[in-house]
Length: 75
Ligand SMILES: [Zn+2]
Image (cartoon, rainbow, N blue to C red):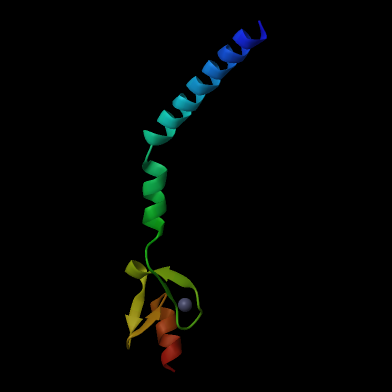
């Protein structure tokens, strides 16, 4: 009787694992979000804050997080 219970338990566990695998493989959105966060980061020359490359402001070949910090660093 113990072996039959063990086999049933193994089948249940295997089924659960298959279901979990399907859930994770059919839902690729979290991985896409992760790769989206891997955008190149630049550091503001004035305050040191990290800003995505697409949002960085380049003044005199130096990266800044905003126009205000670019102006402040020119003086
Ligand atoms: Zn800044």
